[in-house]
Amino acid sequence: MKNTVTNTVLVLAFFVTFTHIPFTIARQNSTRVFYYSDELGTEGEFDSVPSALTFDNPRLKRAYVALQAWKQAIISDPFNFTSNWVGSNVCNYTGVFCSPSLDDPAIKTVAGIDLNHGDIAGNLPEELGLLNDISLFHVNSNRFCGKLPWSFEEMKHLYELDVSNNRFAGKFPTVVLRMPNLKYLDLRFNEFEGKIPKALFEKKLDAIFINHNRFAFELPENIGNSPVSVIVLANNRFHGCLPTSLGNMSSTLNEMVLSNNGLHSCLPKEIGLLKNLQVLDVRKNELMGELPFSIQEMESLERLDLSHNMFSGAVPQHLCSMPNLQKFNFNHNFFKGEPPMCLGLEQSDDGKNCFHGRPVQRSRLQCKMFLTRARSQDCSVFNCRPPPSPPKN
Image 1 (spheres, helix red, strand yellow):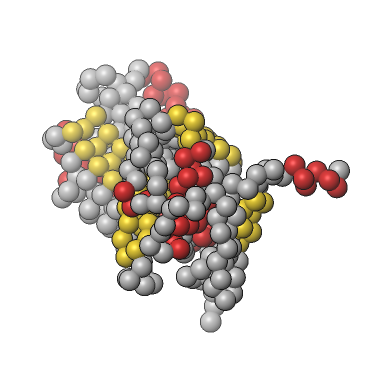
Image 2: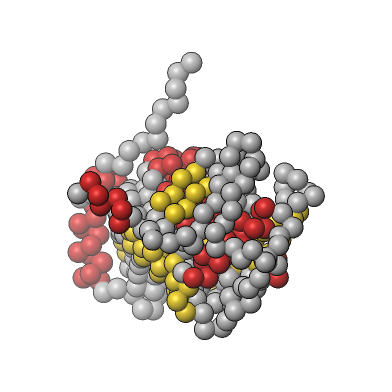
């Protein structure tokens, strides 16, 4: 068993510096890649780089190694995105963008990757960590599979990571938490599963898209610590309560989409603190109870979708007269009171509720049975936790 280490496919070691990245990659029975940079800046050679190739600087040489390793990891490229990934001029490769380095403008380096909509199949090799100067990595709408490489933690300048609409799987890629400058995270339409680490909501991100995966978890109370302007968590397998800490996001949050999950609670009154929220979509959950009157204080709200839940009671009197509200869907609930202003909205759907005299409503028997049961419960039955008290001085 001690000799099984000889069967290791990939051995990876990082010793991070800013300009030179000591980086060793060895493959069993192969000399395809070997590179190092020691503390004195002495650089080893990439065994896979043809001696006839010349590079303007070592960073472009590292980029060549990374891109050639990636090309070998691609098994299908129907639109020939990588067909011109040949030779030392990596800045002319399709989908590769170069610019002056942030730490030394005299050095030209690979600053971005954009292979969106390529329908490319393959995986992401560890060698991609050699692209440590890039600020964006976009590969949405392809057929990449496997996991995000741990070497991505070397991408210290990465600002945007978009790997959406691929076939990545496994647990949440915690390597993204090690990217200090990441602001835009898009993991949607993949096969990720399991829990979301609480640390995600402590990270200084501006946008989080993790919808259409298989994440299954209870929204943590610290979600309110996130400074995002957009958060889309739809079509996963959540459960539990809507944390009251959502109200802490009032200064930054513009859009929140939580549709088609297993959320089972009431809307907390703190939702009304989201004065800058323009889009709130919680359709297709198991939310119930009466709407808090504070929802009328969401003065920036333009689109509100509460449909396909179990809300009851009356729609708050002034909700439909909010100055910016354009679209309000509250069909497939058990509301029994509707302000006249709601009938005047240009885009509104009140069907399948318990409104007398309105078309396409639930039957009286169905409404009576549900409302009788609902009266025996209140929001306290969900045992939703209050926000933690601030520390005492």
